[in-house]
Amino acid sequence: MITSYLTIKESGEGLFKDKGSKFIGRTFHVESAEEIKAALESLRKEFYDARHHCYAYVLGADKSQFRANDDGEPNHSAGDPILGQIHSKDLTDTLVVVVRYFGGTKLGVSGLINAYKLAAEEALTNSIIEKVVVKESFTLNYPYDSTNELMRLVSDLEIQIVDQKFETDCTLIGKVKIDKVEELKSKVELLKNTGTEVVLYLSK
Image 1 (cartoon, one colour):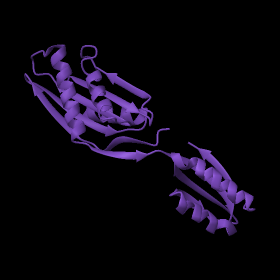
Image 2 (cartoon, one colour):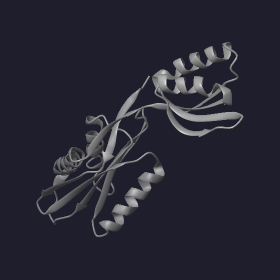
Image 3 (cartoon, rainbow, N blue to C red):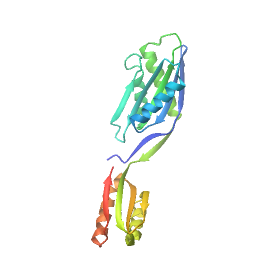
Image 4 (cartoon, helix red, strand yellow):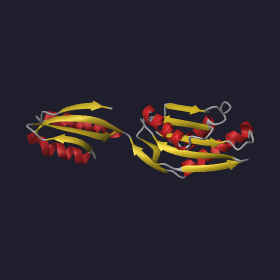
């Protein structure tokens, strides 16, 4: 069970120069293909006159989604070294883009690998990294007169309340740490056994 992961909290920038070519690295926290596309479009506008916008990303707590893109550079000379730096720092939900301005002198594949790696490495070093605890979303429905018992449950399990409605039949939408889901289920069952009409819906 994956209970936490590391990701970018605040973006960073890196710069590497070699034989007139300039490599500018940027990092982003991303959680979807749409956010990746938006970040790339923003950089293409900012660095509209650059020759290459090479990038790599990793998504998901399990790091199951990833991609490396060479954007016209020789195969595996740009995207892979960038991806390698994301993996080396054990990051996910992370996009790293390295923009290249060509300086007129070819660097060769080994030179490119080194340049893209170092620009990505510096950008990641200059980023602020945070540890994120994996949580599962849930909804609880319960009668108003059981509010005290439910609030005790919220406190005991350090539940994050997302939304709450107090009516005759109350609703609590929250998030609980993934490793406390079973405990939440057990405590809800205990409440049911004492006569409380509480219903739990789990949704990741």
